[in-house]
Image 1 (tube, helix red, strand yellow):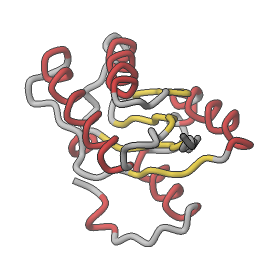
Image 2 (cartoon, one colour):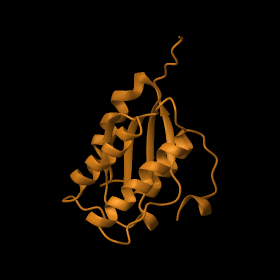
Image 3 (tube, rainbow, N blue to C red):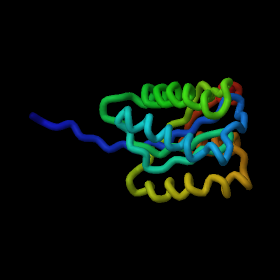
Length: 148
């Protein structure tokens, strides 16, 4: 029987609803661990993750049997339910997300970028960072539909 094989890396980025800074440094390790667990349950391996107070960077593999939309939808739903328990009962992620392909040759660069989020965001806010990703990946967007 022939095998179907794939190794697709994604850098997934999205914010909390209205970019509310609700994920504290104290909660961050547990929040990240839960996110990794949910991803693994869907067949996604986490290469790197960092949750800022108002957004997440998740470098992961895309399972061969699930779409990007379903992967992101499922981790957002499950983590929202959990974060309502551990963070705040009104916790929500934004409706949208960005998913960017990462080549094997750029994997370490993206990992380091994600690991340095706290330092990086001393100089640049999330919205500016996200716009830069959209421009770098040449994704056309309308500003009024990017944020919620």
